Image 1 (cartoon, rainbow, N blue to C red):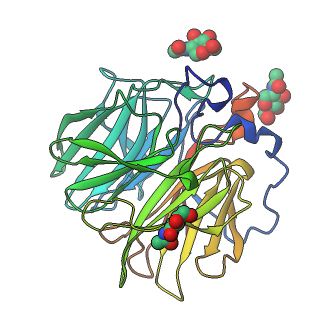
Image 2: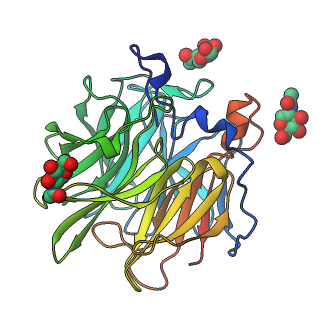
Length: 341
Ligand SMILES: *[C@@H]1O[C@H](CO)[C@@H](O)[C@H](O)[C@H]1NC(C)=O
Ligand SMILES: *[C@@H]1O[C@H](CO)[C@@H](O)[C@H](O)[C@H]1NC(C)=O
Ligand SMILES: *[C@@H]1O[C@H](CO)[C@@H](O)[C@H](O)[C@H]1NC(C)=O
């Protein structure tokens, strides 16, 4: 999501996807949804569920830009249990990544949901280690005074996490223990547009025979893309290519290489769709229609977050629909859904 720009009025990044997508809202509501999603947890309004991670025990960690509290969601019972309150450093959580083992990094920050903006430079990155059932250890590892808007996160390995900067149009790396960070690169394929402030948004990495590939959405350009990156550092190792274009506020996504050349399950946020996109042909179909999807994660995943096993379920986070935020009349809270794929 977003940050406030003090320099260029129309490049102000917005939470998740941009208000400039308002014209698209409701025009593209999915008609051909093929799956019936089940609700794991429905939040009361106002709850903007930005993303989620899944622990090795199967419990879900949804995050919202409307609360500083990190909760744990038991998918069997649908109940939320508080894990940690980040109110000392922010009122929102934007960005979460599961690390090998039972640990996560989260970005706590300051947002204003009525404006759909977050304060630039306000992110504090925390590491949370789960130690058994009842105990967690949480500590701050990094601050980001020079970042634009930190958005999607993905683990390169147990030590290094990549973070998309939607405003700068590039990728940062952060050491998951020491918090040492650096801007790896910026690229035109990741940049915001003149009118929409959120460029690169969701990111995932995949190990293949030719090294590591970074997949990413660009919300402003409406694209899903890929690029070769160095497998140790995450630095750029080739030019980006567009896999799919013409998307409407594409946000985060999950990958499945179980069959064929692989698929992306993508939150096409501005038009309330979860799309299934063939990574080689770019053929896409609407998997489900959900109110304002933001992110997708597998219930069982490998170290890079890709689907592990046929029984793996797809969890989706939602905001309740972008239109209601733009209209300043939020009547439906966000939710976490489960989709059989
Ligand atoms: C958020 O922005 C609105 C509209 O500008 C303002 O009225 C409100 O006080 C802000 N809230 C916070 C918590 O800053
Ligand atoms: C990447 O693009 C640049 C500029 O268009 C070009 O000069 C360069 O050869 C390209 N690199 C590769 C590996 O294709
Ligand atoms: C707010 O949204 C609800 C649900 O969509 C609608 O019924 C109601 O008329 C809206 N209220 C206003 C003041 O627009």
